Every structure is written in C-alpha cells, then in structure tokens.
Length: 365
Image (cartoon, rainbow, N blue to C red; front, side):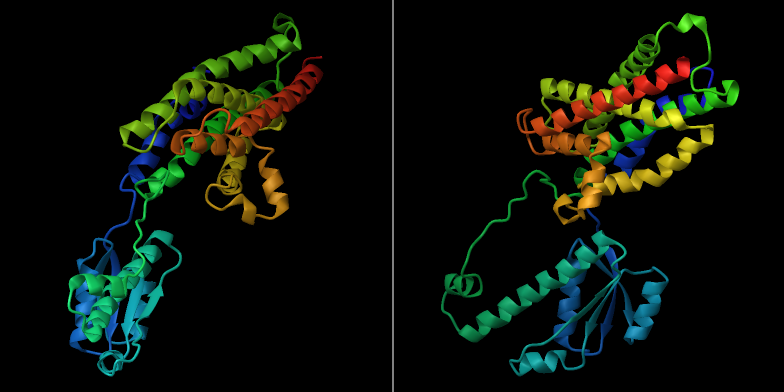
C-alpha cells in the first residue's frame, strides 16, 4: 500500500482533506446578500420604501436597477443577479385606492438558497407593509389592539434538529458518511485493478496465502484498523472543527461505526472484485456518488421516491449509514431508535461477506 502513490492519495490524503474542504465551503451555513435586480415601473414612494426594506435585510442585496424585464433578464443571464423584483405602474395607485397591489418576483431556480432568500424576503417585507397599512385603516386606540388585529394568532417558530437552519448542518453528515464508503471503494478498486494488470487475477497465486479466510481476514483487519482512525477523524473531529451540530454518544457511535465499516468493507471487496483496470473504479465512483446521495433520502424524501429507487438504495451501505448517522448525530436518537438500520447493515455485511468468500475461494483455487 505504501508503495502505491494513488492508493495513499485515496486512503490518506483524500479522507484527511476532502471533509475539511466540504465543511469549509458550507461553514457559512446560509446565503447572505444575494444580488437582486429591481424593475420599478411605479417610481413611487411606496415602491422605493419596499426596495429599501429589502436592501436592509441580511439575505438580499439590491445590486441593480433595470428599466424593464428584458434588461433584468439579461442581467440574470449573465449571472450577475439571481432574481428580479418587479413593481408595476399601478403599484402605488392601487394602494392609495385601498386595493390589493401586486409585486412580481422572478427567481433563478437553479440555486435553491438564492431563490429561498429572495422569495422569503419579499414575503416578509410585503407582510410588514401590509400590516402597517391595515392598522392605519382600523383606527385602533392602543398598540395592543393593532397587534391583535394584524396577528390574532401568536406563535413561535422553533427549528428542531438543525437549529441553525443552515445548509452545512443539513448536508454535511450525509456527505461525510458517503466519503467513507467511496474512499474504500476507490482504495480496493485500485488494489484489485493493480492485481489484475500485474498478475491477471485479483489474488496472485502463492502457496503462502493459506485458505480463503486468511486472505479475507487479512484485508478486513487492515482496512478496519485504518478506517477506525479515519472514521473517528471524519465523523467526530471535522464537525467540531467547524462548529457543526454533533450530539453523538460515544458508545452508540462505536457500535454504529463497527456495523457500517464492516458492511462497507465487505461491499467493497465483493463489488471491486470485478475491476479489470485501475481506472475502472474511478468512473464508477464518479458516476454513483451523487446518485447514492440522492437515493439515501437526505436530499429528497424517500417517501416521494419511486419504489424501484427506494429499494435499490438498500443495496448500498451508505443509505442505511446516512440514515443512522443523521439520527444519532443531529436528532439525538439512541441505538434502539436506529435498530432496524443497524440490523440492515449487519445483513448487508453478512450477504457481501458470503459473496466475497465465494469469489475469493474461486479465484484462489
């Protein structure tokens, strides 16, 4: 292993630096000062007040003013802004007539965080200005009467689990779990591909290897010892370096990571046995990484997936691993809460172990 630079890159350098880069990118958690184009055909005090309030928010930055929507569309097309706020000519007229006025919001939907900031900011500003207009018309005598009139139902919004409401706390636990599986795939794929290129078989012929269980146990112990350290660094150290939510219990973590690593190791040994060249595994990992993240149910709910993709996800350790780790790390779950996932990981490990034994026994014999 130490004589193979590519293997060292995927086993040491990639797990060491890749999680740090990901965490660093998402460390801001939420997007701020998203640039917006304003098309003000009203040219009124009300439209300018609306614009000032939007610009005063932390989420939106009024970066450009355009004469019409065509000009604004051109700015969006050059990616200088991510949304357009349009005030029609009758905006102030309708307000003065005590009629319902309209504000047009056009967003670039290719970036979810930018769209969310623009849309919610417009909603909040319109709600504030609408409440002020409503209280003036009611003619109440006390501030309390005004509060009850515009907000008869009082409520508090308390985010649970992802208390910061940030994208990093949302996506990072799943990415870290996936990194462990994919780097194992890369390492074993490179090893198997090298053996195929050098000896024409996954395991070179040698009398010193002993039985099939000797070969398999040697590989398992090597990767298990190495990834025991790697997983502790990736899942325990990196989130704390960037102050992400991490409420793991130590004993629960050790039991979970033992089940997950065994499943990943045997899965990698069984699937990478079919690699013919070193480069094959890189193509497979690049092709499957985003797919595995989606079908895990973290970025899109599993209940909304077609049955085929939902059940396909259970063939990969990352699906059950992501569900288990998110529950333990972010939601305060205990082992009893994730017991079905742990049983699934153990079943995966047993099935892939059996497949590995059959393949290696055939190769060695």
